[in-house]
Image (cartoon, rainbow, N blue to C red; front, side, top):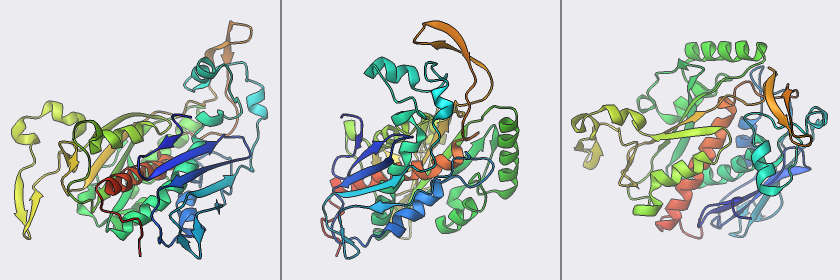
Length: 366
C-alpha cells in the first residue's frame, strides 16, 4: 500500500502494529558485500528502548531477528527482512476506551480513512512502528560509515529548557558519548538534569511535554540532492515529517532567517586547506537543494505525548454522543529522547538513497 514504503533506490517497507505479533521491515536495494550482523542492528534498536523513569513502563526486549538477505556475515544484495516480536503487550486498557477517540491521536482519522482501525495501542499509527525504521536506519548508518559519514541527534530543547551546545565545536564521537550519558540525550549534563525534572513533573501531574531534537550529519560530500523537486532539504523534511509526533522541521538557521538580513544570512565562501568551505552554516549544509559539504543540520519540533491521564473531552463514535476520556496504560511523558534514534535513522536513509542516486555507492562493497 502507498505510504508504507520509503526511498527510491534504497527502499524500506515497514509492517506491523503496536499490539500485533511483531513489527519489522524489508530493506531492498542494499549493496552486496556489506558486513552486517544482528548485533549491528540490535545496537541501534537498544538505543530506542525505554531505559528510565522518563520512559514508558512497557518493556519489550526487541530482540532483532534477520530472516533474509545475509549470508556468511555479508549482505547479498537481495531484500533484507528483519523483525522483533511484541511480547510485553497489554491491550486491556485500550479495550475499555475502544469506542472513544483519543485526543491528539490518529484514532478518528484512521477510522475516517479505512472505516475501521486497530484500537490496541494505536495499531499502525503507534510509535511502536518506528522500531522498524531504526532497524533499516542501522543498515544505512553502517553504509555511511564506509564513506566517512556520521549522523548524530540530541535533545536541543525539552519543555522550554534549552541546550546551547554547538555541535560544530565537537568531534561527533565525543558528542555521541555526551549525548548517551543521560536519559534525555542532551550533551549538556546540567541542562539534562533540568529537562528530566520537567518531564518527571509533567508525568506526576498526569501530563506530558514536547521539545526540539537536532540531527547533525557530518562528512556528507557536496553534490547530493536533485534540482527542483527532489531537493535534499525537501527530502529530509519529508522523511522527518513522517515520524510520529513531529510537527515541524527546520534546516540550518531555519525560521531565524526571517529576521536576518542577507548580509547576515549568507554563508560567505572561503578556501580552507585548499578546499571550498563556508565561514558560517546558516544554510545547514544545503544550498539550492544540494549539499555543500558542510554539516547538515536539521531540527524538528516534537509534540507532547497525546496519551495523558488528565480527563479530556471526546466523542463515543458508536453512540455518537460527547463523552470524557482518561487514557490509561503505559506511555512516555516525553517522546523526544526515544525519538532521536528514529530521526537519525530517517536522515541516514535519505543520505544513502541520495548517494546511490548520485552513483557514489556501488552495487558491491568489496
